[in-house]
Length: 280
Image (tube, rainbow, N blue to C red; front, side, top):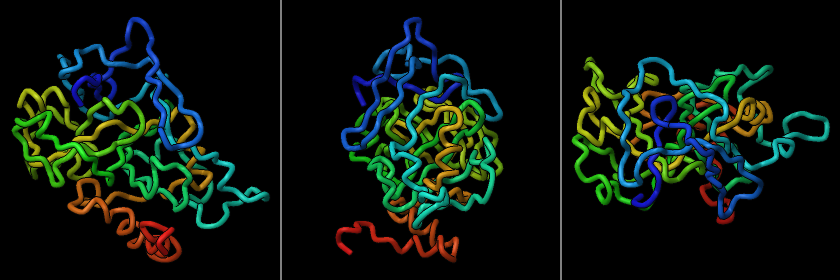
């Protein structure tokens, strides 16, 4: 992470630079184009320096949001008659309601066509008219957290590595934590159940209270206004309620299958899809 800009979630975590700068985010393997943004860190590369705490309540995104989503053309998930084809269907039935995915899981369908989200489970931090932001919660990365942040003061949940939160701004670091039951929170915002969004500056300075375990994510997943709604409507994602242990689960490599299997029926059967279809 050294040498990369540190970013944190909007509003207190991202600043508008005086000169708009493109992140130029792209995937080395995915097809399709990625949108860029002028949102960037105003801090030094070594660590965040933000002086305003995260405000309580729901995090709101403003336009322009950092836009990525999937690179799969949503038309590819529909048949010529305009209906969902194959296993590419969501549990949504009619109209997709903006904001309805907030604090839920986006579970990718098999054969999505975007390596960034292959068998991915995304926890949606915020979804509304201005766009959406989420974190992939089942893709541990290769970099040990203690290599860059050895003294956090709060236990890092196993595996103690930076997770791949998404293809947008890989130099960005965000953190989700597990709230201590009955404890007052400092430096964190409640998301859903025991899950909280941790303020990175408070964490680095040792000022987070009421959190007894956390994970750190490098990069994140973002969608422009209406983009996630269109992907859901096209059947790119299953939208599923997050269980209390899903987001910070002990075995993230099994999360995609376990979440699908517990749905039962046709969706549950999708959870039997092999990890590597070429070996089936």
